[in-house]
Image 1: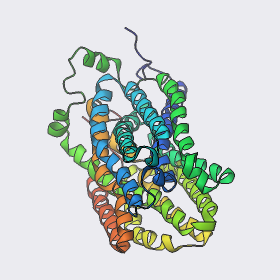
Image 2: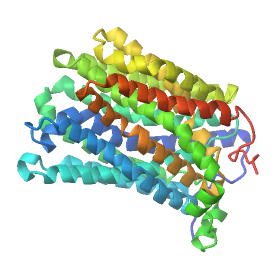
Image 3: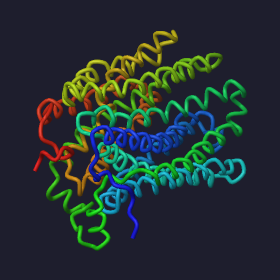
Image 4: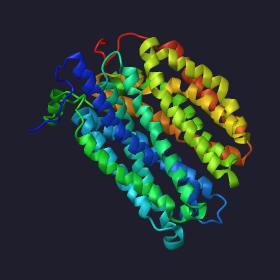
Length: 444
């Protein structure tokens, strides 16, 4: 029986670093495409909503964001399924299956007839495809965060694992760049009519390349663990019973670490660009798109800096920086950015938020991976993240839209601040800056 290449083979320091970088790049490429498929929806929502819902329906925007939020309900299920799969049969295979599912759904959305042609079935197909993508994304986060943390060598784990969010944000950047390119050549009616289909189709085509890349990655789970799972001996691997009975403390910690980070991430990086898009609507559509592309690129570039810093000064320091900054800045960002019509000030307002956010995003994958032993790591990281992500992250764009319609934006900002404050409490009192952890094999 053939086995995938394994990271467990002994190597000298130079060869180990080279292999670690190679696997990081391959893992990152897959992550990039998966998250492009996630964000192409939010970036192009304003253009395709009239194709899936009646243009006369005043609630069509809310419906589009409700579907966006509904996909997060599938993330815990995807995290359980793929996490269990990855802990038993390997990270690489789980990641390959998830990207294939994402690609199929992107093609389905790109080819779906409009509501004018098939009525309500258009919205139902959109919902179905996005639910499946939510399922795949739930698996992608846990498996890729685990893989990239395990593939990184000690001493550089913060830096190398930060590329998990480089590519996560990079997916959003690519979606924005796709929109910018279309705006250069086509007017909004053309993008609304058929341009958005090209955007979804690009995600499907790119996944074919990623499928090949992921098949050439080394496997980070040991061959003995995979063999034991095949023979039915690894009862505890990827087991919910093992996770909830023996690993419930790190699971709860993972959930609470994520809560403030995910509500900030979706408020800053999804709602934030939407606020700019709205502020520069009309004749300034291109200006708004350029601002968003620039500031999201800035966020992407910040990630390795945060990861490198965490290797120097510890993970807790960065998380506390994020927590304090998020508590102090979120209210201002949410209430001031929608009314900021100066391009430079709009960029700087969101850019400062992204500096704060980097304290969480750059290191959250490795922080969570360090909490769990190998046999439940993908499941624990994925499920802890997905539960918090579904409750606080995916609902943020929908809650913000509701707050806009009911003139309660200030209350939404207070809600975001409160969730970040809870996570800040956890960062300060329940985390250590450096110490024994499961990834280094120093925790027993």
